[in-house]
Image (cartoon, rainbow over all chains, first blue to last red; front, side):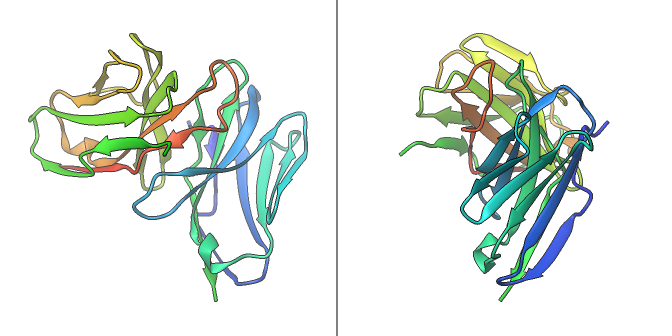
Length: 112
Length: 115
C-alpha cells in the first residue's frame, strides 16, 4: 500500500509562474514531511521540510504547506526557473523512527 | 567534501551471479540506508542500519543482504540476482537517530541491469 502518494507524474509550467506540487498521505502516524529534488544521474537532495505542528514553512522561493486534517501537503515554487526542472519526491516520517517513506515523484519541467 | 559514494555506477549482469554494490560515507553518520527507485513506485527502502552491526529490513528486503562492519561502509549484496531486481539503487546516510532526518545525504546511484 502506497502510504505517500503523488498523483501527478508530471507538471509543466512557464518560467516565472508558480509551480505547485501535491502530495497525499494515509498514515496518521507521520509527523514530519520532506521534499527532495532529483536531477538526472544524481541522487536526491533535500529541499525543504515541515513538522506536523506547523502548517507552513518557507525557504526562499520554496514554500511547503501542510493540511493535517486532509493529510495533504504541497510544495510551491515561486517564481519557477528552468533550473528547477527535476523530479520532486515527497517523503514522510514517523516521530519514532528514522525511516522515510517516499512518494512516486513528480517530474517538473519549467519552460523558458 | 561531505559525500556518499557508490560503486559501481552502472552494472550489467546475468541472473544468479552474485554481486555487491559498495557504499561509503565520510560524514561519520550512524544511519545508512539502501533504496531502489522504480518508475511509478518512487523510492522504496530495502534495508537500513542504525549503527555498526545493527541492520533491519525496510519495505522491500527480499533478495538482498547488507552488512555494517564499519561505520562508513554499508554494502548491498545480491546473492542471486534476478531480472526483477533491475533498478536504480541509492545509498543514503544521515546523522539523526530516533528523530527527523532532514539531513539525509544520497549517493549518486547505481544503475543495475540483470539479464
